Image 1 (cartoon, rainbow, N blue to C red):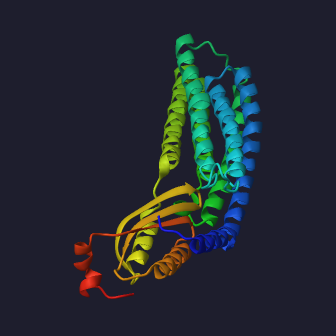
Image 2: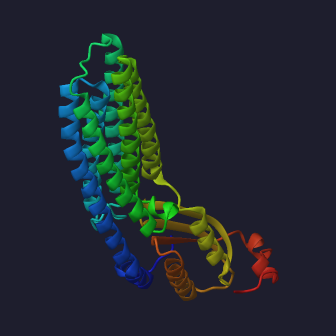
Image 3: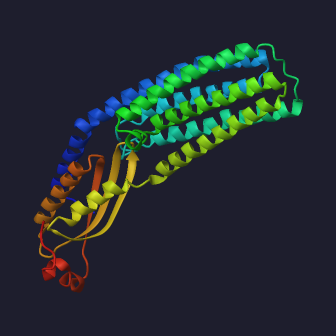
Length: 343
């Protein structure tokens, strides 16, 4: 990697500008809105979990108890997401020089595990247990249970609308759902609305037919739904934790900018990696045109880094590796033969 004391000083200034500019302020506002959305979902889930659990025990309803487990899992996950929002904004330090942005992905992975274990597995258990014990459940209290589910449907629906409103305010689905915390809330609330609907359907059919198999099927369906959602959320969090590249559009802009520089003969390699929700590491291996002295190389490197930071605001760490190709290859390069004009 090429670098001098003067360049490193300028790089630090570029990093400071990138982290303290309007994009950073916008990120902070988005985080505050996400925190409010998570708190709304947490409050709704805590109240609903208690109501579902009480109603489920009174009615002896496996579907209602499955929904109670679902709400408990969601409540725990909201706590994880609040931790993610707080911890991912810690500044970089000596031990973590690229910051703590990936904390967001880690806590989202824990939330996915929570949905799978606490929600999906318990729902499967309730469904299998209902099939094993047969139709011994008492129908007394089922009306109260349906009322609880009706209230839960309204609360979960309100929380989902709040989350979808924020997604729309942050640029729509493609942009808004980049945030793993907001994406998890939307997935949880959407799953909760569908799960409550399944539970209500199972309970009504049980009351009408006297067959517990309907509620057992509802519990198993809720479990399958939760496992699927947990798998999707966990896979996305895993990809981000491993080190996901920037989106192709951003990478294409960076590559085009590098190729447009008159001092760059060729772009040998370009690597990007998301280090957080709104931060990306960029490393490029470039071959410069022949004849540049060291001072000129330094000026070019600083200018290119600043251009990348302006073109792709999320590029918070930018590294340029200046390579030297063999003299024969350099002599035959487009820049040396006049085949490529400057930009």
